[in-house]
Image (cartoon, rainbow, N blue to C red):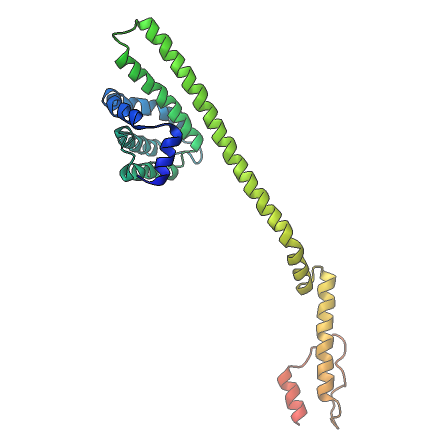
Length: 244
């Protein structure tokens, strides 16, 4: 058993007594798990056809994978096989695009159905039908309230983590921008007028180079400076002129 699972079990209050009870309970609820999971996935299945929603076949595959995983869960071994099964279930749900909200909502509905299975098994000979019905409604209400609160808490936590990460990235960007902007401004003129001035300076520099290369050459028919707007001769031509 990995350290992470051991710590998680301790946080969840799952000790040896709870694990023994899980193993005893699984035979009582095994037959009803497919129906419970079908009820849990019903809300997501109702969204089929919407953009980005999983198809009916994908949901069926996810539901079947969840049923197999729960057999590992209620065996209460919590070993590497269980961890691998958990990762596989998470991967399937991610691949079919099932939003975590639908996943948690499915757990809520499935859990309440499992309560009914447990009650039907343990209380049939101990309580009247009316008493069992009241107990069932109470357990369902508590489960819905607590797990609904968990769903909203997880959603709010995820949104806050995303917001915090985005704020950090924006802060880093603001800190880096002045340096980057200064460097870009020094290398690339921003306005058309600035680009034109830079081009004119470049051409003037080429003209001065050409003038220096041709100055002092007797009999040269070329002007000492290229007229404004005239194309600057290629450097190879300038070398041929000097050599002559």
